[in-house]
Image 1 (spheres, rainbow, N blue to C red):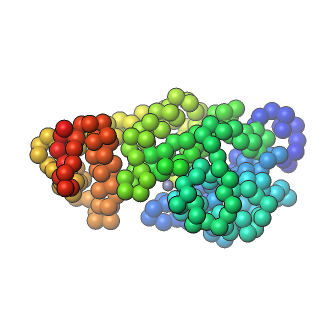
Image 2 (image 1 turned 90 degrees about the vertical axis):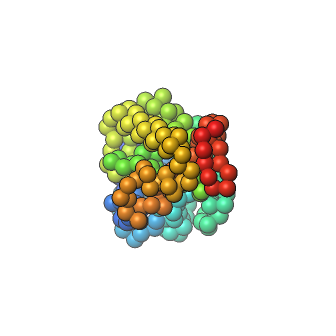
Image 3 (image 1 turned 30 degrees about the vertical axis):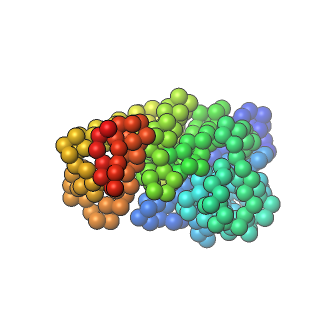
Length: 274
Ligand SMILES: [Zn+2]
């Protein structure tokens, strides 16, 4: 079914292939996307669950797998690389380099550059470097169809973790949200959760949410709250213990952004407005 007249127009045929890896960090599990056609391309490798591999094999049918494009090195997106390489040895594996993380996977990574146009299905996707959640984070934009494969840039109904101590940057994340706003995708297909049919509204609410959070943190500093743990207590009253670590990362990400902007300073774990 891949080689018919539709190949003449730049249609990217998309099949969602679930990762079969539900859990506290992945929600219902990861979405991966197969772009079928002349150049069968899988976006993200998930975790190598047997269910993912068999669903991928079924979706490919008699087609080979040409490329696997990994959006970032987090385990739920990259750990499936080796099992997929074992089953489809001719597939190329590509991502934006994050060398200390990429080494964990015994596949021959080929680098993707920002803005690169990559043949996929019967069309192409453009790599859009969108760091913040992770330094190597890529979205892939099917410009002809208006679909942005948004990976972990947004999570419908939730917020995105900015792991300040492990390669996350709130300043970069906000710039990435604005970059995608300017691309004006018609819809976004995230790595967690369902399709997003109103990207501009979601992107705007994400930016507003972070601005509100920043305002609260500035207010806490102005009120003399100096330690990040105390700011977490003040902002996230009654937070379940399991989520405290994430809240701490989020507050740290905001404080670092304020320091980068010259609006706050830190000394021995205590923070104040500059
Ligand atoms: Zn991630």
